Image (cartoon, rainbow, N blue to C red; front, side, top):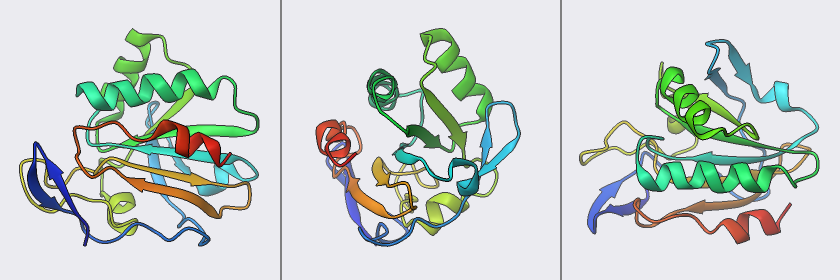
Length: 165
């Protein structure tokens, strides 16, 4: 269990992030068209997993915008923006913002992605949502970078995540 903060107040997660050098666990997430996707759908691609509590907060929205901007210049790389938001909210946000370079995925139905990767918030006002995490995966599914942002309201270190690609 990791200890992070929300507004300076301690909150906890369901476990620890997967280790660098290990394989990312398979997942089943919901796309904005309500179809399902899994890790196999991204085979052979580098992945940036931008994971956050809700696209309807300022910091989460900023991370989606920032990765959308970077994604257009990344070779053989897909940016997955993952939250427990309903797919409708993800689609609405990206449509209103004109963001087309990221793939929004929802873990709303079971929360299994957050539990499997140890990043589900277990207490406090955001319990059940995902903590702010970046995981970078190479073409072979091996994790090359992780960051769990210590204060949920802070943005991740974009440069560190992009530097490993």
